[in-house]
Image 1 (cartoon, helix red, strand yellow):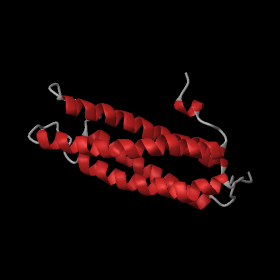
Image 2 (image 1 turned 45 degrees about the horizontal axis):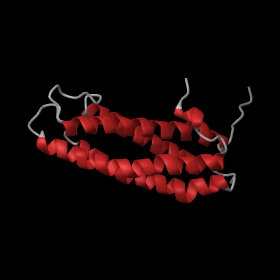
Image 3 (image 1 turned 60 degrees about the horizontal axis):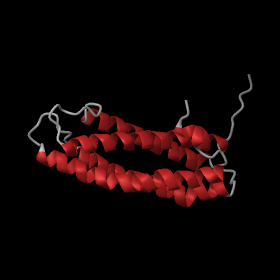
Image 4 (image 1 turned 90 degrees about the vertical axis):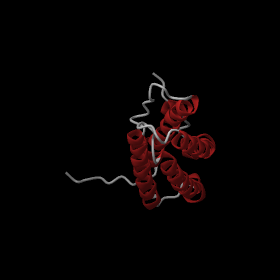
Length: 163
């Protein structure tokens, strides 16, 4: 089975460009729409017990957090990787911590949405929200996995333990 990770460039410089063009651009395009759609669903269905109350606010928070994270990569880490800089453990550690925060936000989304489970009488907006949210989560998880498992290990110092 081929995964998205199998189709990404292995060359670090090419991989950083792929991440920017594919994931960063997609997150920037998708998240504002998801915020608007979540706010609409919350407003229209505020009297329903299954409404994902607080989802729009969480997604707004993610817009800011992801933008800061992506800018740090685009302006600091990725140019250093393209120059084959040596001392990248500190910025990579910071990026991994951001990734942990993003993963926690994904878990909060799943909790607010009962793991993206639609109510039986869900309207088209609610259905579209959960469909698009599912795609966004998959993209963000792939983005994190590619950086953590493919890109970052190429630049982290290996500590050899004397056994």
